[in-house]
Length: 314
Ligand SMILES: NC(=O)c1ccc[n+]([C@@H]2O[C@H](COP(=O)([O-])OP(=O)(O)OC[C@H]3O[C@@H](n4cnc5c(N)ncnc54)[C@H](O)[C@@H]3O)[C@@H](O)[C@H]2O)c1
Image (tube, rainbow, N blue to C red; front, side, top):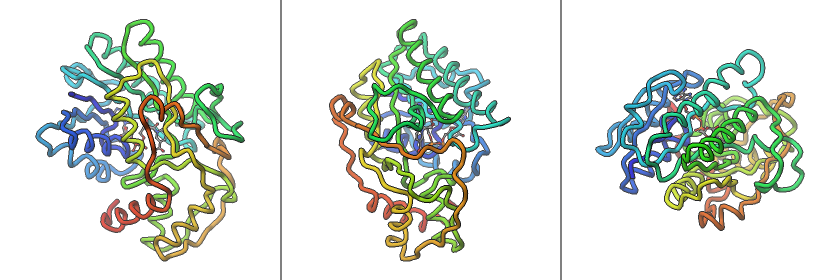
């Protein structure tokens, strides 16, 4: 297949692009190299794609640029370009979340109307569920985002549904839960903690460490996305998670064990918009995608630590 991957220089997009190329697909990757984190990091992420004979990388802003060249001839779309991050989505910066998460999705869907596609996958998020979860949520739970970021991700899901119903674009949504692993964004907890272990210095922990997350290793997320591309369960919305939670305090402990350098923790107040728990039922993805996450937290952190040590600029 010829797959268009948006956000192809980012954490998940670049890992997906590499996997698709390794599987023998053709990949057009687009990214606007948004300076939210360093361009050099993104260039390194996408180096494999840019150099591959079946890959091409285009610097394109999905919110404004003409999309005909990058959509020409594609057979499937995975839309991962976004402005991620819960904490930054309040105040004036909400406008950039609207552009990157809502407008880009609408423009890409418009550009997809006339294409002959096998699947159009929207990279959604656990953040659509909100803060009410005390037990694991399945996809029938009523979305109630707890942050402006979550609102924009939910809007993207709705747009994807609308373009399927009205124009037949074969959309489906995957709700990713707390993805970590090599190339993780520098603002995310595990990557920040591993950087602190590498460079020395304390780590900043928002909240008391009792918040729980369904941490999901990036290769499992990419595996689910590839399965969704192949099987194309059009119209579905699926949780993609590990199906098990860990407290942030346990993550810090595991990082101490894996790195041999127990981090020094500096406690900060809980950030507005951060939820207490993310926890998913993953039965639907298991049934429709044969999804079975394989990497546990300790092994995942071990692999990410190896990557952080071998990539000094990461
Ligand atoms: N990382 C996670 O834990 C997680 C969890 C749930 C959902 N998601 C979703 O997965 C997707 C990928 O997340 P990530 O962690 O890899 O983020 P990332 O920031 O590493 O990647 C996103 C990429 O999109 C690009 N981008 C932003 N606006 C663009 C635009 N207008 N045009 C073209 N490119 C643009 C950025 O430059 C960036 O490289 C996002 O949609 C995010 O909402 C991520």
